[in-house]
Image 1: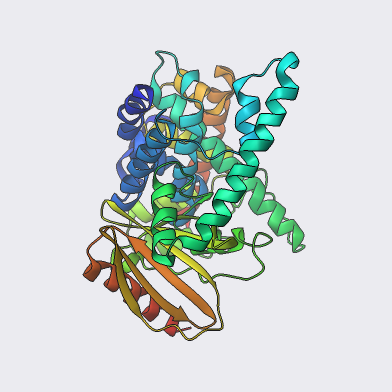
Image 2: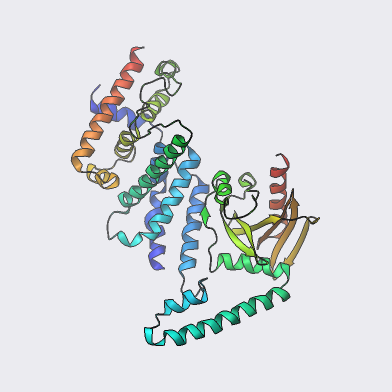
Length: 175
Length: 224
């Protein structure tokens, strides 16, 4: 009981971070809200597994796991209709696939829209490390805990994500 | 462009999405409900045999335990048959409402999205209940479950009205039910018909607010 009261104190401060991560991964508001709610339910069940640790990476790890299982459900559903699309590996990164060209965005002079579009076009496993690092300001160690990968993998994914972002932005600038 | 410059641009320009007040409220509600349902004083809804085996009967007394279990089961069956004959429809609706908030479960599918809740009922009921989004009227949905009303499986939807809960029970009906408001022990019940469905909304909110909820629901379904 008291455990759950302290649960509220531990988790609520990270609700914005949780929503931000889920929103960036799933790319729609309703899906992100459902993912956060599901994550809260799971977190309550596993609250005992949090032992004097920092609640933030612990909770965000649950949130990102819910998001990735949503990907699995979505791609299973797509396969059912014969339009298999592997969200995990298939990069929708090539500009143009989203319908908005970097050109359009640049001309409208919106740096914000440009950066958002560049992030959106990263494949999810690269997008999540960039969001955790740049938007949530997490340490490499905490990112490793959230994503459950070794520190070296965090570094290499961040490096790959940055190369892609720079290429995307350069392409946007060159046109 | 070097990594530092890229980081600066991303940090400065990228959108940082924020949780809506509605999400925050429903998370707080979720936690509060979980606290309530784990409270030891609230009786859990389990079967008699389930309860009995949970007590941890040793093998020697299993026969005696089973016999006692049978007696309790018979007593319960008799009791519920007896009760069904005497309890008023309003009383049963209020009892279901109170039990869902106390012992729970309040919902078996947790979602504010009707496109998640409606398909959840597939295979659980022999009819497709209306699941209506009335969040714009200030009544966000938190989830749904299958409950038992007058001995029959019945769709139950749960909405919030500020800090109050509204249970909506729904099932097919051929009768001609008019829009009707009644009270029972301080709770309010609004009953109406929606197409082929008989709908009841039960809550402890003011009757005027529950009526507003029912009207928002009817407006939402009349457009379909």
